[in-house]
Image (spheres, rainbow, N blue to C red):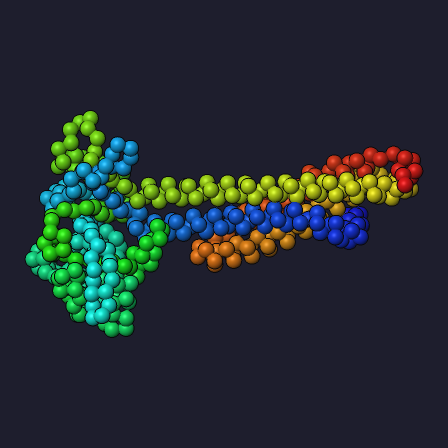
Length: 401
């Protein structure tokens, strides 16, 4: 019985192929849009999470000043060497406390020169950033203490200045200072903010202070917590120590800020997750539009086939059989549209992922939900026309021209 009903439904759809195609087009677009939007959104979320992980989920960034109306970071005093020493001695559960004195320098090698972001620091920066060396060695303790002109360069700097020539052991000019290249950092690529993380040069903090910037300011600190240690506790300890060091009394606002990368990563991921849901919801509206299209076409079909329905009822067909026939037609249209929509959605998502350089993160539940919703639309929006067909008066139907 079901096979015969299904056969009749397919025949009815094939008799009006163009109209059936235009009807299921709404379902195809709706399902494809939902799958593509959600998959692209998931890929974006994954990329954001990966980019944030590059900065370290156990890393806290400490900077002088505060952001916001009426606040200024320019008036806040920078950190100093004594702050670093106190933090290293008193903080518990941390892997590294890395100072960062930052500036822009011009580096020259042979006929090549370029403007590069420079950081005065020590080996703790490599630990805090989980950054390995592709070649060479870290700073020696004697170089850190004496401020010897040694430098570690990023991959972009190495490529632009040296090309295929080995960089380690050669000397470059940093502003007016001749500096030996002792190591090259492993490539990290672009950050989530679009900056090239490999376009960088690291120098011993004392050398950077004395010979590059001419002051002892430290613009920022990187604090890396040990695995399993609650970064919120480390953040609270940093804030307490710095308040003491900077003479901030109870009730006064901090003149520094501590950013927890774990919290930032969670916030970014949650934000992109909400946007993904919104995109999916917007795309889902087109599924409803497709359902309305199915209902409209099925109503037209009932009107066109009134005489056929009357004949079936007159020769003994039951109302439930007529109801099932038209309901199956609507569901077949929806399911076929759902299958095509799933394939199109996956193709669009894969193409967009490649074009946008984001990972292809397929959530099977979204495919099932979209396909199931397409079937549900066929049932819901096909029921009213099917019920109308089943309730036709056979005599009136037979009189219909």
